[in-house]
Image (tube, rainbow, N blue to C red):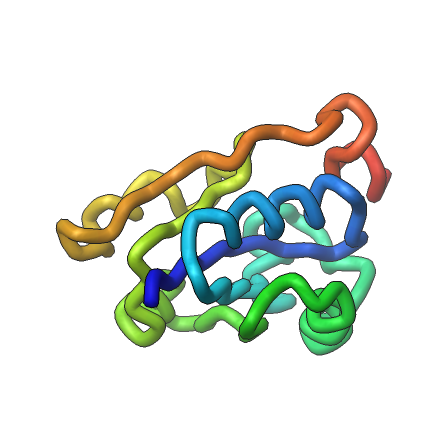
Length: 130
């Protein structure tokens, strides 16, 4: 079974998120989505998310795309990779946070892929949440 993992905030869900998850799932048999913790969102974006981390997990589960939706780790952002043991890490086309050291945090067999954008001028979290 080929496992795929995706990371993100997923605060205000929109069709771009659904596209990301569906395309990521095409790379394997099992999709795990890791949702950023509230404290991590504050640290990275400089503001609290609109929805709590538990609400964001529940909203993603309602989409019924991912096989598993979990919260990220506060102390070690990359720990979930060793715990979940993915074959593929799917990144959003514009995802830059925690990507710098990602190659150092994975085993040689793990492949990193970029998911294509979906109407990024319309469905982009930074445009929707403002």
